Length: 168
Image 1 (cartoon, rainbow, N blue to C red):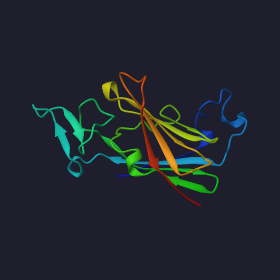
Image 2 (image 1 turned 45 degrees about the vertical axis):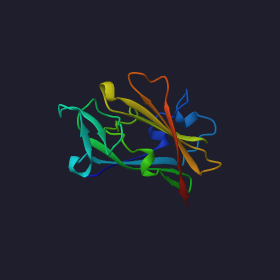
Image 3 (image 1 turned 180 degrees about the horizontal axis):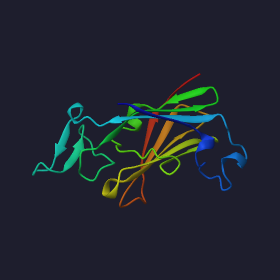
């Protein structure tokens, strides 16, 4: 079963807003995101195990975040951010191999509603925990920057850039 989380900026903690979203200068109140998750179905993925066949090492040929060697329970199906009349659909590669997202807003996710727009999400647990931030520059709207902080060494994020399509 698909689970869809849709929320507006005012319902979340606004990144960098010390006094709360409603009083932050320059805040766009017409800002929301939609995160669609679904149960992880192992037969739909190629899962690589260690030599003993007990610890998941890779999913679909790549390292993954969100689980400490177990098969994930939840996967992200889509992420869309709406700012004013512009909709941004993040490409699948921007959230590939990130599982078990925490969708218990505001603790698990935040949305910054001023340019550059940013969506932050936490996921996983233990050694599989991660924080991810997707940043969209409201001026160029051609790319989304993804930064992933892996635990237990979150000092150096893994940074990737993806082509972004905006629609009105």
